[in-house]
Amino acid sequence: MLELVRDELAELFRGTAERFGHEIVSMEIATDHVHLFVEADPKWSPAEIAKQFKGYSGRTILNRHPEIK
Image (cartoon, rainbow, N blue to C red; front, top):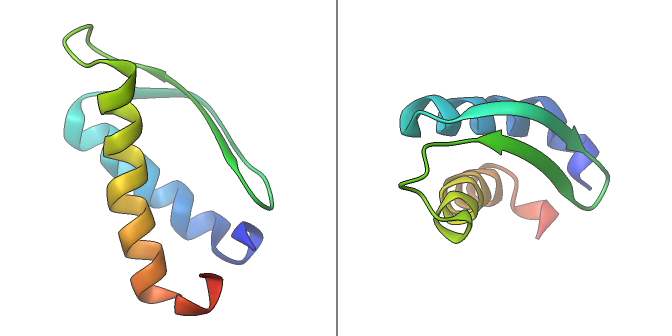
């Protein structure tokens, strides 16, 4: 299902990275999952980084495209 919103999702991830000062080194959006390789300040734990990306993008995509749920 993610192929339907691939470009929109990539843009949301880029915006999240910019907002928190992260750098996306590599991004792959598959049909049912996403791989992100992110360079971030050590003040952020991996769990916090995942929450930043998943929280905003997930809410936004589901609000805009409820059929994906």
